[in-house]
Image 1 (cartoon, rainbow, N blue to C red):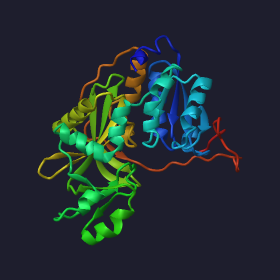
Image 2 (image 1 turned 180 degrees about the horizontal axis):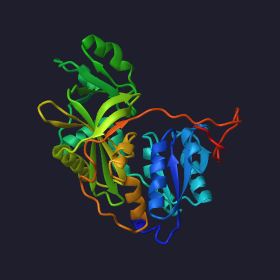
Image 3 (image 1 turned 90 degrees about the vertical axis):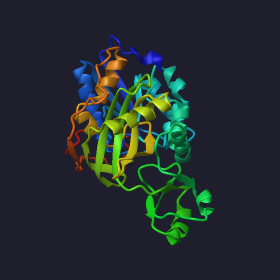
Length: 349
């Protein structure tokens, strides 16, 4: 990824492809603002398996692509990159991270920077058992975690437990097991179930900016106040030295990070900071951090342009509250037609 530094020097335009763009309108808006602040024209492309997505109402061009688990997924993205002259590719969900990490050099040969961490980093983060082992090895506090098979062999249990899929995302399949009856009845139905020690406390999400060189330069903790369907709907920024230091330690231990790393942890009543999950991508609640002053899109684009930014580790406003709501787009004359390869005309809000 070193060639990306200064890759856009002298450019008046930046072409960005967002994969699995879905409803990430606020993030696309942030990149538009960032590009304009840097006096370059943003040309946004939104790719998704669905033919009709909200992000297409903001992007310049939309593309319908195969599912991330399809053998043709990466080739479809490479075709878009080659045809459209894409400069930067930014993934937005977990399901395609491993494939994109493995294909980083293929995109680089087309002069496109895939903002994705190194393959070993992505694989460690995607596998929650591997992440548990990694955190323990690096002395980072994390809840005790077992595979279902190992837990079922234990003689003594300490309920409640927390169950989740080993390779899951967006909180799908996550729930609390209150007793052994629940453990035996429900856990076996969770795909690749892992069991974690249940930790009481206040959950925080950290946005860690690592740019193109993997060095953690800014950490924004967001206290999660309300979550719906796995995505935060109410949150506020928190300046907590111990939490910020934990974000730095995790990113430094991982190494090979690119762009943003999202870390979830729980601050317990007795002050312990316990890391529960790490995702090497933009988190769904990142607009709060950006609004608070941690302008990740501008920093990334400035780095791409060869214009380093002055960034503090706590470069954000404390106590900024985010309250989210749905906003609708209305597109005339769509019917059953696909919007693949183009943007809908005249969206109405």
